[in-house]
Image (cartoon, rainbow, N blue to C red; front, side, top):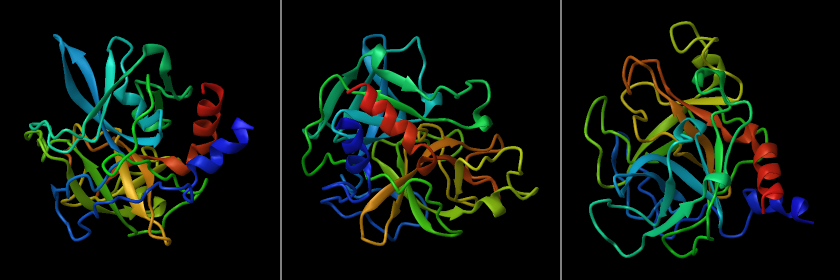
Length: 271
């Protein structure tokens, strides 16, 4: 029965997913502080160094014990914890939940190649050592219907604690910016990313003064569905070597709707 139940739990219609208690600021164009706790499935993936944990990537809580992030965020030599209910990393707000992740509970997509980000499959799942406590500041993300592809210029939002600009500082407060979808036909044009860099299993968004940057990796591309729920359509994967906000070089995301079978099978076989 579990295999049958998992797809229902992860679907956009799953009870309680994709519905922030604190509404996002939908008017932000360039990156600004997000409204506190308005992306309640956003997590900070942190690694241990010298007895302390440090932010390295974002991610999305997709089930009480499961987080989705990018494969390139994972290193076999590091120990990780997931921080939920985080907003301002410089403040102890009382809403934070810090949950360790055991090394054996990290599942990187089997076709991920660490030396070839542009080859795709940049997705990983983390099983938390205990279930998250869901509340008004920690909620589940909805995933889009399998295979769904958004049209060109569809308004989505990136969120994360990535650098404010190329080589710039890391913010303490969660940032957000609107990133319109750039469809496959546009993103693969020679003066954009080109056909060699972009696969059908990716989604591009942004491409001018709005982009993801170092530290946003693994985090969500949040897109609002017709029923008002927010769905995570993308996992931040890579930006141009020319800089985080290079013209005609949109932020590239792993397209979540292309990997839902793998997500469901992985969770079902390790629950």
